Image 1: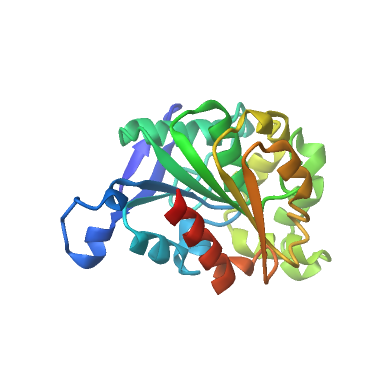
Image 2 (image 1 turned 135 degrees about the vertical axis):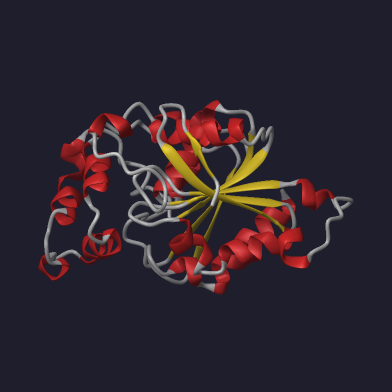
Length: 261
């Protein structure tokens, strides 16, 4: 499995596929086969959970082009530092830039789920290589998570709970279940100072699609974020923060946007 050392030496895992991997056709005459799409997963998950199992990666790959899925630091098969400092100074956004540098990618579309969508927004605000964004489960709730550990104290407490059944709030219980046994890297991430995502949204000029489940009590509404975006649109689909990714309606919305961009 491919890995590379990020800007500070943390090893990051990624997968890198093209339609030729599926079809066996090495032709690159189709312009779609030159498109690069980068997938960024959400908190306490990994690329497998957010993009492979729900069928998103396969459907996006079928459109053509190159599809790269990155496991964020502290997650999946990437390095899992437990020092709070390893997650500060917008390390996750810098990791994506390091990946683009490592693979010599000069233009891409980024699809980000929840935490990955926040990272994608901050990336698009400063990096001209991003020419379109798809944000899944990102809205007024999930874009307001800047600041220090006090903002995320309930999540930190949930991560440190020995028995998920003791956690009252369903979303926190689900994050704790997804975290499994190796929870200290995630607790360090939650304890770090997070950058202000909403404060830089007006610098994002590329097309942005927000896709949010009707019952997503984490993302809430797309309306406030849409007001800050100069080129944004939104689609509501069935499901909540953890289930919308597997719905045909979300898949159709994502594929339609990608095909147009």
